[in-house]
Image (cartoon, rainbow, N blue to C red):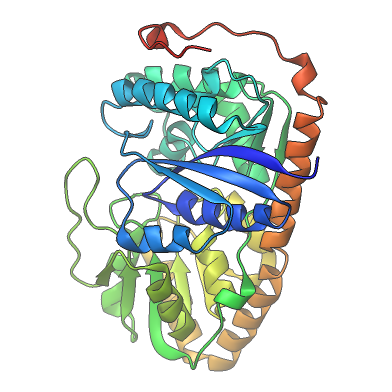
Length: 380
């Protein structure tokens, strides 16, 4: 197939937005046209500018709630009807879902679904226990969506294992690592500060551990990311210096100058910000979790996510040893070369081609609409 139309979903409040744009850019090289349906929150002006730079991208914006948000299901059902109408207009050759519940629609084109993260695995990693009963609807809707996919993709082996653990056997599945463009992230003269990127309210990012460690560090710690939760609430900090939500251009400028990038995460299925930091020449100090070990191996230092003393010790040691810091930064940058956007785009393109050719789609069966969607006249 010389060209292809892809209908893709993306949220605007996390790293999936960056992932979706980078993938759309790569797919354009194959002649693919991507209709990108956004949810979660209205696009910011900087996000609109980023999207406008891409060829063969049709942007369709909404603010429907995402599955993990408070009381989302009326919005999720409305977004199902909206996506169905987009599909009737775009007539895609493949549907690429970066959401779960939409997989339960009776799609005619083959469906590729990416499990970037999920509440159940987040809860287990962050809280150390199973998600409570009130997440039962979420579990059922995610499970139904996964079963509706022709191919399930995860950004790491660790995340793929988590999906199987929490939702049972999957359809055909594979791992495709994320990628970032090296030309966008170049080191500048490194300055004596530590940088972290992540929503401050997200316990998975574990900014609270940096907040505990910061008073005992000789360098300041800056954190880029939202402090206000989409459902309300605000994370106050005293010892790290919040930068707020930055544009991608500003993120690149901060990464270029940062000597150390710290992400003591409890849960991070891939860690796109760590990849961008490595490309920017930062030494990496990461949470000691399976996914980050998988991605970075011995090119980063790791700390237990509950151990502020260990974080202080590792960061202080790197601050005292500039040669070791430089060696670690070089190792991370070399490792980052494995995760190129060209490789990511090629892997997805090949997956679309295989699905469209009928390697998996031929086994599809006609599925009825979930009961919660019957009220929506999705039509043919």
